[in-house]
Length: 134
Image (cartoon, rainbow, N blue to C red; front, side):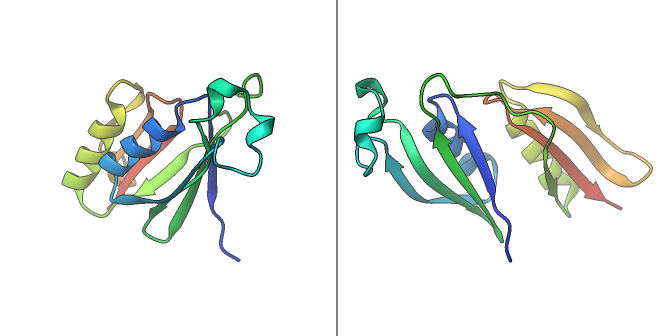
């Protein structure tokens, strides 16, 4: 059994995944638009270029992205994606990159358990925890 993470977006999935590809050591490995999918007739015409399914791979973790159909998007709540990073400089870099245009909930700082720890909600509304343990 191998868990993966599904991220739902309100029309900006492609931009979000390209942003994550720049911020993280991640790679987009697959994209399918609504217009090219077998479900094309279920999406409104203006949604044809939006993402029906995409895959982003970060180390051993797979993220799936989707622009949910208009009217069904709900902002993420009740979770965060925790990134455990060994190097403090890389933790600083990733936190800074994810923070661009987002909202810092807890500034990246030293804690009793970590050399760096911080919480940010990126500009796409996805919450992240950056943790660089001692």
